[in-house]
Image (cartoon, rainbow, N blue to C red; front, side, top):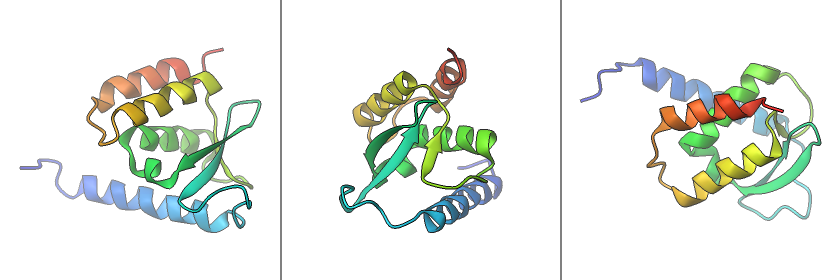
Length: 120
């Protein structure tokens, strides 16, 4: 039984609403982005990655979205930008690819993201 009460549901709903707001602000996808995929921009170099939209619901990607919210407060123009190092993003993509159902301990990944997120 879930001891979180309604708090977990409310947080999840807020994340979904924020994500919908971001997507609605985004312009039409570029022609080189296939249906079912999303362009995201990563790091100081603003490197572009094309990822499946299914990644957006993965627990690891939710951590990235929380970090983006802390950094930008979702108050920026353009595509979805993630303020982490490119190597960190690649590492997290591997985690998502290797654990598509999210069967990894979120707290350990969160700690790794915190440790690697802004490291130079």
